[in-house]
Structures are given as C-alpha cells and as structure tokens.
Length: 212
Image (tube, rainbow, N blue to C red):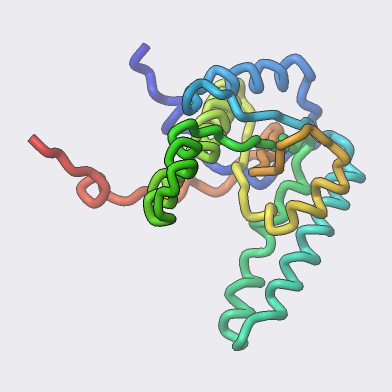
C-alpha cells in the first residue's frame, strides 16, 4: 500500500493519441472521483463527459475568442503578449478524445446562515467563506480522477483557465442542473510518446513547516 508511483508519475498531458477511451474506463475514473472527501459530505459535484470532436473544437474556438477579448483590454503591449502567450494552455483540450467537464453546486453552510441572520459583519462572513469549500471538494475529486487515470495508463490535464468563457461553454454544452455551474475541466486520453517531463516542484523546505 505504500507504492506512491501513481502520484509521482502523474503529470499534465497536452498531447494525445487518437485512441478512444472505453466508456467503462471513464465510468471507473468518475467512480474514483466520487470517492474523494467533500466538505460536510455534500458531494457537490457533477461530471459531464464530452467526446464529440465537433463540440470540443467549437468549445476551443469559444475559449480562444474569450481569451482574445480579454487580451484586448490590456493597458500595454507587455501585458497583452504575456496574456496571449498562454492561450495554447487554455485550449489544448481540443487534442484530447475526451473532455470531462466538472460542475459544482453551492456549498451550504449552516454557520453562514446563522451568522448572517444575526447581522454578523461582512469581514466575519468573508473569513467564513474564504476556504472556498466548494472548490476544495471539487479539487479533491479531480485529483482522484487524475491519479486513477495515471494508474490506468491514461494522460490528463486539469484546467480551470477556460472557465473565463464559462457561460458560453455552458450554453454550448446545454447541460442544465439547477444550482450547478462549470468549475473546471479535465482532458483525457492516451498520451503521446515522449511528452514533456513534469516541471520541478518547489523544495520541501520552502513549503513545509513543523511546529512541535
């Protein structure tokens, strides 16, 4: 049980083969995702599987247009170029045979309701919601999917950047579930050979503190 290779072997994959991913494998990955912890066990996730290449390509066009529109707002050329330099990272899902769209609903907090009904100041309420519990639950589910995919021989890329076109993507997909909105997406497929190595991590001494 101490073999952690699936963690250390996981890396973001942006180059995929055209091989199809069997439905039963996708279901197994989503099952792994739903085994993740979630705040107050609310399981505030829903997964939409997209395999239609025409729709995937249209989604990439939507993200590209949104990205360009944001770039046009830049106050100087340096900011514009920096913004546009990452556009391929926002649209690389177009090369994947499967895109998993991750939706989330609001995280319900009884403590927020109690405090708000008692006219708690905004700074107290802001502290209460600052952990972004809904997003943390989604992140845990996504990580389970990424690790399970690595173990099953698939490549993935976890993406939140494309959600600057959230509303347009939601309209394109046509998925509707009351209270749910798009949070992130995962590109999934069989990775190409010799994909770029995993970027280095910060040294542990920079991110680890023991208090004894």
